[in-house]
Length: 211
Image (cartoon, rainbow, N blue to C red; front, side, top):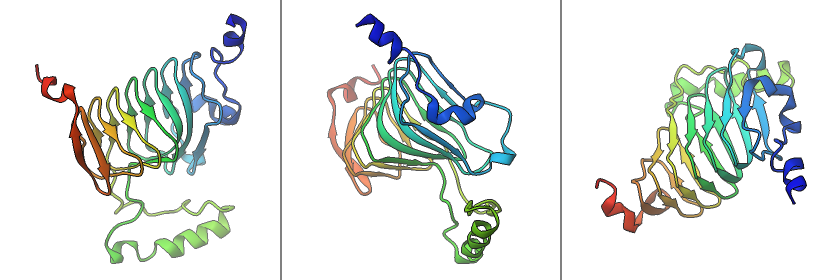
């Protein structure tokens, strides 16, 4: 059994991330097989770590950076069963977080809500797709695109097919029901569900959190 652990869980699986191994840091005890990393501004990247992952985790995620900006940090003892993280600001997942499959975490709006500010987006995407081998955001204008950090605090449990949008903090120990859409902060030690998600239950620790 010990030999099995040394050959598998105690050795990071980075074959699909090998191309960008200088852009991420992963503790050797964490299992990340099945994860992918994509940079849409590959020729503009900064000389730094874009992703840091702590120890004793099981991570299956698609990491996407659409510009040279952004940072993703994942703490210790985190289990992600299947998620897509799209980042140009910051996504922080703290210790002891459990996440199911089909989850999307998106820290920016992608387009302005105002037509005059986004009216050229589709045309630019089309031109870029032709001229840059399918990369349809090579020359995207990000001027009017809002972004804000997402923080998932420790001990959180997130159900399958959840969507988490920009600027959200999910408080310690919170539970997010399956298929929920999170558009505003979630209080610690609560259960939320729905679209948009609302509190449906206060957990026992809720009353003790300020003690």
